[in-house]
Amino acid sequence: MTLHAASREALDLAETRLGEVLGEAGTDPSAVGEELLAVVALLDRELGLRRAVADGSAAPEARRELVRGLLGNKISAPTLAVLDAVAGNRWSSPRELTEGLESLGRSALLTSAEKAGNLDSVEDQLFRISRIVAGQPELERALSEQAAPAEAKRTLVRTLFADKVDPVVQLLTEQVVLRNRGRSVSFGLDELVALAAERRERSVAYVTSASELSEEQQSQLAEKLQRIYSRPIALHVEVDASLIGGLKVKVGDEVIDGTAAGRLDALRRQLA
Image (cartoon, rainbow, N blue to C red; front, side):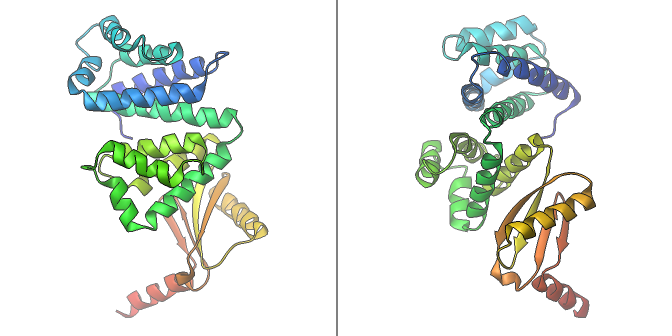
């Protein structure tokens, strides 16, 4: 997510308010996250409303009153408090406002998983869904098709994953599918994996192995990568027998290819 200076400041203030709201007794972070993402969907549909809420020429209180008048009796008080902060601050554009609001919704859902002690499971489930989607081009196309009805895509997600994943994972997956903005669904899910890892103060290493890695092997690999990158590493491992042997590791934009197939490809390029 790329934001201009005014939007970055607005998001920082809104994140602070979100943290205060989620820290209050009785607040359900999951409900707040779900409601915030529902408001994102509303603003995506209603261009005029989106522009009005982000209109920097209007007084902050007028923007807050607009939001309260439209949503005050439709959403919970904690969510409305966060929206007050969003509407009351200055954003660089309507698009950046909705991007920031989406970020707040995702953060609330991940906070819910964190408080429930499920954050590591949520991270792993998001990764597994990402690999399922990336490994099935037809499914990726069906979920990424922008012209497809939203309800049809939501139904497909629920048919595939309902009752198999944490409710937070389902909500986040639906959000990625319904608002992919021309990017692949697997890419959007990988972004969420990284966000979850950041909350655990870790970086993500995507590991592709020619064969299954034991828990001991994964632990040793994580320790080696931690020494290389000087920070804790969360491993996400998938098996691809076509690699013949060895490992491929991706951390951020850096790829370490120690596979037999990778070495053969490098040799072919040298001989070409």
